Amino acid sequence: MVLSPSRLLAFATLLSPFAQTVWALWPIPASLETGTTALMLSPSFSIDVAVPNNPSDLLQAVAQTQSYLQNDKLGRLVVGRGVSDSYAIRNAKALLSLKLTLMEGSQVGSISSEAVKPLGTRSEEYTLVVPQDGSHATLTANSTLGLYRGLTTFTQLWYYYEGVIYTLLSPIKIVDEPAYPYRGFALDTARNYFPVTDLTRTLDAMSWVKLNMFHWHITDSQSFPLQVSLYPELANNGAYSPQEVYTESDVQYIVSYAAARGIDVLLEIDTPGHTAIIGTSYPDYVACFDASPWATYANEPPAGQLRFAVPEVVNFTASLLSSVAQTLMSKYFSTGGDELNTNCYVNDSVTQQQLNQTGMTLNAALDTFTQATHGALIAQGKTPVVWEEMVLNWNLTLSNETIVMVWISSADAAAVVEKGFRIVQAPSNYFYLDCGAGGWIGDDPTGNSWCDPFKTWSESYTFDPLANLTETQYPLVLGGEQLLWTEQSGPQNLDSIVWPRAASSAEIFWSAKQPGGAPLNVSEALPRLQDIRYRMVQRGINAIQLQPQWCALRPYACDLDA
Image (cartoon, rainbow, N blue to C red):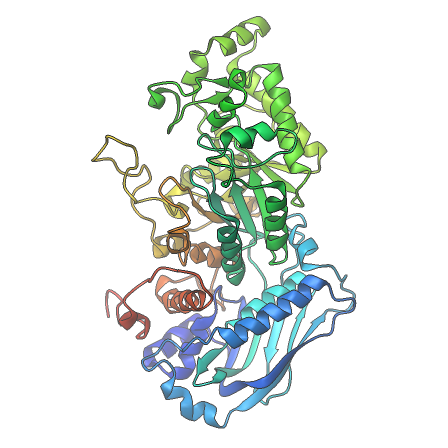
């Protein structure tokens, strides 16, 4: 039978054990058909990779899948955690194997190479069929990346009870593909440092919900932890300590680790603002360096911005960005461009002298700087990514291919696409995970975070990526991401502040709607998000609880109108 949204809710009301198993899937597939027959995984279950010249990362993904199947040991989220299923699974047939194939004519490439193709050209669709009679299941796709997405879904179908791995919903047929090509998570590792193991663990969790872009905000005014061979002094002087750096080999490891999990790494070196730390190595390149009061010259301490009107600074920045970008597989690189404080330049004698000598305005100087830095990236085959101010606050000559991140407010998306640019939806009023933690500035006991209140998963889940846009503008929306700025976060709370909240946008941008076409629905989604949260915990992610466990085991019982 086809589980339409109304049928799902009807089944949920009945609280039948068969219906509840479908809540395991996150993000919800584009098309989903299930039955009501119990099926267990054979103790000798195997995955047959019928792909010619199968890439090593595909084989690693298969081994990873086998490990999850054996070690998740997730009891179904019902009272008794599966005891009521024992009768159904006692005489269930056993699934012996899953066969992986590519569609005829498909080119065989590694998952890693497929993951870093240009947005809109990555083939992530797949078809998964699990029969009820114990004959082999099949997973077909047009690429190894699609196979990887299908394997991710396959691991979510199964529960564990007293040594048996089982589902209650066979036969199962899933035909799936993403609604948007960009589905991301952004992490700031400059305000506070995160060890490589934290990043790889985060990449694992991203892959489980089919996120495919890791936006790595790696430097900022507070620290420069990125080692750059051409400019070693930046990390030597700008990292918090010699141990709190990302070496070039660290970056390559993270990029490779991500790609093998279907994730592209979008590195950001924010310029010309958010660059005070560069002044510790190049004091002549930074205006209002560590100036006081900092609030006059910056959005947060310390003050300091690149003197982008000075030709030597332009050349340095272009060289810096180019030298980093050329080491990365991604087709994309972010130059930032947000929160530029003009007071800093009005009061900077070096900038004013340069503007007076050349007869340039501050805007014209920024345009020259941006054309030079972006030109250096484009020469490396990279597409520049910027924050929205570069389009809305300044009159700059940007490549038509430039991607713009909308962050200040969801209301700004319409103004950006009106100018013809492709956008990534990252609005602070929906997607900022750091909001609501209270103020962190000293000597301000009544201060709050600027983007209060706390953004719950359910509030984020109500975001409409196409709001206030015309149908002809819809293709300019590449997708979106949730973000964690880390003024008040570190390794100690990374998992709990990100997960499972960041999964909410994963479903918005993968699924966009429920199977059958109904809009996404918070009430329908909660039991499934509970399920992926509990599965994350089984896999070592310290994801925070969404509700008391009493509620998790009794879907809908804790709804407002229950």
